[in-house]
Image (cartoon, rainbow, N blue to C red; front, side, top):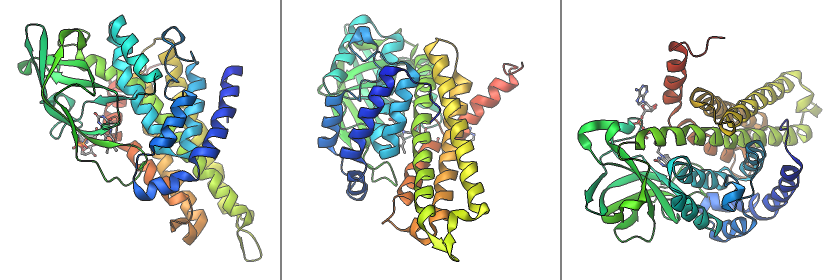
Length: 382
Ligand SMILES: Cc1cc2nc3c(=O)[nH]c(=O)nc-3n(C[C@H](O)[C@H](O)[C@H](O)COP(=O)(O)OP(=O)(O)OC[C@H]3O[C@@H](n4cnc5c(N)ncnc54)[C@H](O)[C@@H]3O)c2cc1C
């Protein structure tokens, strides 16, 4: 692995490796079958602080460099992508608070996470997927409270989160400029969860609808200014995409390792199948693409850490990493032949897990729209 990680990062990476082999790597095969949210394993991970990787030191987090945190997340993703998605989605729920929230909101959201709670990011609705501006959830102001009504769909951590970052319209006539974000705690009256998704992959993560029905929240729960929600949500998503890129890289890395492990011992025509240069070239292509994707996510995270614009770089990282995760997992199945297609071997799960990374946090078509927009605006000239 090419990450240039710190001494603290290296120490933590060893802990994460041990934790994954003890608590996740084998167990996730059963979670994949049942679709259960493995509360006990998550509780152990929270005791290790793996949900806090992105929290700065002054708010009680480990104060990790982003590249260190990325290496840890990739390691967890290699064991089980659903587990890593749970942690990354929680980070995304926290992001808007960290970008635009008040000190009190930052303290509250971070303390919930530090105490073993998770965040969730509630943007998507039945009629508002790629077209984020079509959000219909409303937050109507009544003196010192907002009354929230609407349905969010496909929400990661929906039924297990301690708090939600919710996008709602405070002025429906203004489209995107009428969108505002709110920090809503999950035990608030008027918050319900429904429709647990029976997913193709990342089955150890929780995905469901979150419904707000006459949910009254204080004005102090608003994140940033009224009408500022779209810009904050887009910036949070830029950062979230870089993190999801790391998870996709972890899936691809695991697929390559499984292909090599199997291929070395599988003999056909009297020798290991990996003695065939045609298959070695497949492995070489996997390694090149994984390394490229890792460098891209690393670069996007470095820009984020430096407070520099990263929209196109994060879009490229997430798009490329998820495309090569699909390609690598498919090629790994090919190297395992019929056994790759069997649920008795781990690679078919990797392919099912990989697919979602081309869809969520903006589909890869949307990422290409972001990238093309950047090129056409002349921002990629040297
Ligand atoms: C497992 C899972 C977890 C999720 N977690 C969350 C979460 O935590 N929070 C949250 O808010 N959302 C979440 N989502 C929602 C996810 O972000 C959306 O599904 C995604 O943004 C796409 O929206 P959609 O499904 O409505 O597809 P649509 O927007 O209906 O798109 C359908 C297809 O049309 C294409 N398309 C649409 N518009 C264009 C265009 N202009 N040009 C070219 N192609 C276009 C899309 O790329 C896609 O291929 C999750 C989804 C899943 C499946």
